[in-house]
Image (cartoon, rainbow, N blue to C red):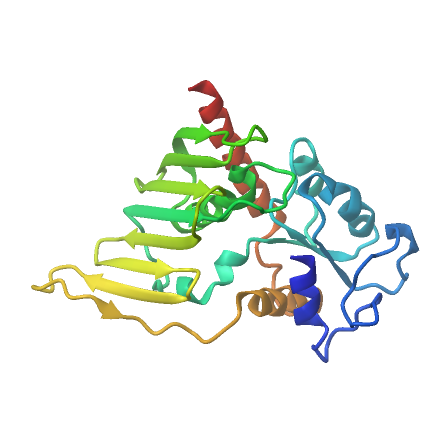
Length: 272
């Protein structure tokens, strides 16, 4: 993700990257205390267990930070969530397929599936690595979670690799969320049912469809999806906040809430 962020930022006229390799993409940053004093913002895309170590010195200097998801793990969450000049990289909130949902939608049912093939490099389990995207979206769309049931599988002896979760929110929405990083093919899909329609969102291919209720034949309708890039949209929102033009998107409190729900999921898996 660090390289993806850099490749998107290097061409922006409103951004100057302070450390570049000859190819124009940051390769190895120096120690945090060796970074230039004139620093407006930083993107933290190191292993999750190092997020606080890298971000805290910058945040204490007043540098705005975009921290990749998860915000942090363990006790570091509480250290980071008190800072207001912080955005968590829950990039699926900026996925153009999600924009197909109307403002104010109140889901009654959500079904998410997020599958990846083996080989992902990460220091956290599949719940913190992949599922946390969809846990954040459930919280974002349907409110606080009041009940969690879960089952998980450690396929390679390195932590949970696949998990199936059943959630109920304070609004009465029921969500089922599947995540795996030992699948033979990838998928990033979400189905949302509300009182008016059934929405089918393909977050991977950035496509969406809608089936309106009470329409007789229940024919599917294609939905226009904005021609936008989620990473660039995240950057626009974050940099706008750095310049004081808008609030920081996906604030620390939201990132902490997603981590704590992921911790509840892992606890439910351990209890089975």
